[in-house]
Image 1 (tube, each protein chain N blue to C red):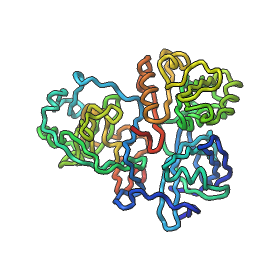
Image 2 (tube, helix red, strand yellow):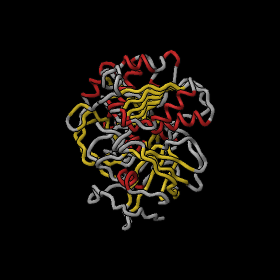
Image 3 (cartoon, one colour):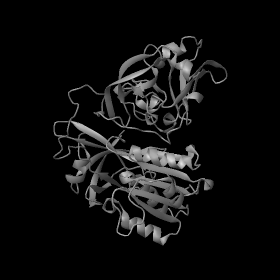
Length: 199
Length: 242
């Protein structure tokens, strides 16, 4: 619609790299959380995969860390408009964690310590698109960034990458998570700028 | 949907923070704690969008945002130094339905602000006043130094005419003359002295830079506040900084 802001030219940092629409480049790693950072002891940490009734996969910290992990780089896009490119992560691919799970479910709800939830189609967690990450830039993931472990689904806005994740519930029907129930987009593709409901 | 607002007034709150009052035709109203996206567009079509908390109480016609100028910011220098009365700005919102206070809430409210994190909490204090709410409010406001405090006179006036609104300051770098607590960040003693005890089950709203919010929210949970009664919002250059 084009209201020109007289005298505004912008700083255009990162305008030489391809970012999703409406995003700007940052080199720090901002923190956004709806509540306090939970204090999670590794000897009590647990990750489960269930269908809301029966548990089909369960790991404590040691058995989780015994799974084959990979180091990968990922671009992060936050709905609050910052993007961080090329961050180095280490984590376990959800392909590995879901490999032994037989399901007809089409949807997944990630569950976190502190009761945060976020929903996504199950196929978005498969085929090398999602990890349970526990290191960032070579160091243990800091609590405010979701440590000891967080879901990482870099192709969706970052609120889908649940911090402090403790499990995934597989569901036959979609069930909105925390932000998805509060006006944010159900799917959250940054390249289609799906920030809020109706986008 | 983007709306076009017109700048009605400008007011410098501190050396680096400016309040912009806008009239926005078609504005649907807002709830205290919500924010708006502001879009600036250059002559060649380049645009930049940032989110700003609404500072004013709900009103059908106009909103106020208070913008802190960031030294290396892209949008805040323009909004605090270049925008003039009667300029037009593109706005989207209001946005957010978690970090909000509604006038129907009657439980005790604990507000804890760091720096410009006061802005959405000020909207709550103003909203309480304009709705004639009797909800007991306590605000603990941490600033670098006395001159950095936003809305000081208005907060003073609101708390002196209503005993259900109490106001405490904390200073991290420099204190006013005669202030007994040495400069420093909020600690458990100050929390115990100035905020609602957990036994009253207040809803707590904590807003500020990331390290401030981590510290304050951690102190609240440590003295027994349930995590699900603590709502946080990180504020700062890009939502906070590690």
